[in-house]
Amino acid sequence: MIKEAESGVPVPEICRKHGVGQSTFYKWRSKYGGMDASDVKRLKELEDENRKLKDMFATLSLKHSMLEGIISKKL
Image 1 (cartoon, helix red, strand yellow):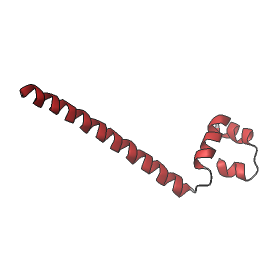
Image 2 (tube, helix red, strand yellow):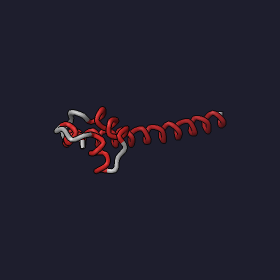
Image 3 (cartoon, one colour):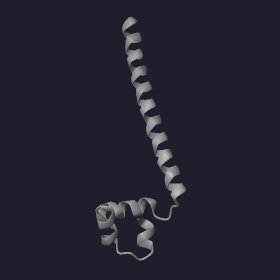
Image 4 (cartoon, helix red, strand yellow):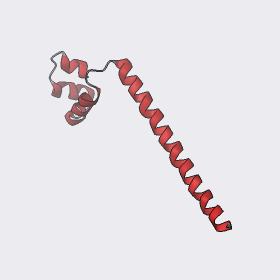
C-alpha cells in the first residue's frame, strides 16, 4: 500500500481498495515507510520475540515474588 502511494496513487483510493482507514494508512506509513518487505518481516519477528520475552520475565518475576513470600513466612 505504501509503495502504491509513493507511485502516485491517491491515498483515499488506496484505502478504499484495501478496506483500511486513512488514519491507519498514515500510521503504517510513519512506522514502515522506507522499509523493504524483508525489513518489515524482521521487525515483526523482533516485536514477537520481545513480547514473548516480556511475558517470560513477568511470569518469572511473579514466581520469584511468590517464593520470597513463602520463604519469609517460614522464617
